[in-house]
Image (cartoon, rainbow, N blue to C red; front, side, top):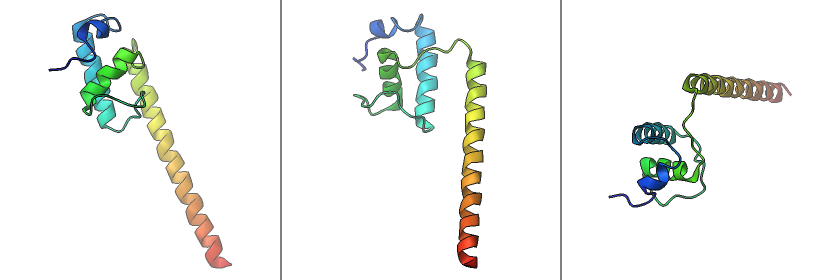
Length: 101
């Protein structure tokens, strides 16, 4: 049984129980996938409890445009991959130049 945060305080941040379930589920999946938590400490050790704590704190909101968020996340992931590839190429070039000297 979960006592904190209470459903009453959570519904102050989300307009329906159904929206709350969906939002908490999506955020829990994000946390499980390695997303950075929006709070520094949690009472719960489970991702769903942590997601609910974030919702209660007001740091996670229901996005009115989820397709835009998905596209932004996709672009951010591509940028991270490109940055990693650039760093790898720079490292390889530095190793080659040190070997030639």
